[in-house]
Image (cartoon, rainbow, N blue to C red):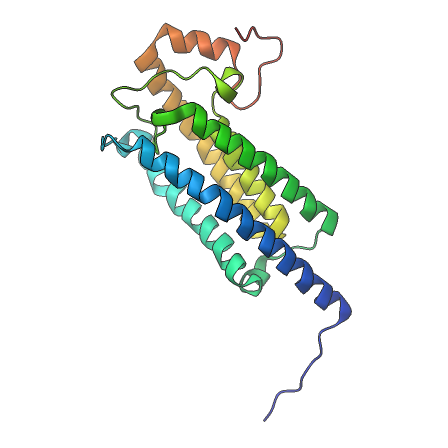
Length: 216
């Protein structure tokens, strides 16, 4: 038996049109930011130095990257076909989705600034390289983890643009895991740089600038 055809309503058509617009915006952002990230990753790995991921601890190893993969799989699925993520869509105003576009622009600028400031110190784990240096310029002048700030802004912005509660929940969980990981990372940095890093911690915030601190 042939199924009855149900014509899309005006609201459904409007939603589909908005999805296509935001889909195009997100694809452009990825086409601009992804090559920059790949370039800096390859540049930092030119020494072919292997870092021990086990320093992160079993809990972070078992959760952070698998959940991160789930998040990005959802994003890619939505960019390929917005309808594939309709099961977790949420209704938010269009202006809020456009606000997400503004947030992702800020996140992209912060991410690129962070990449340029880190240089070859960039790593994918909490370990440091043999020739690791303590970065105190760029966004690191005010905050110790601008990379994680940009990641958090990206995840919130994408959730707003896509209007998807699953991505929002995953983003919150991932940022909580990053907070846990920073404790391990900072312990390693204290062990590596000693009082220099302790002094740096006293005048900077972990994720937000420390109000009233001397930034010299």
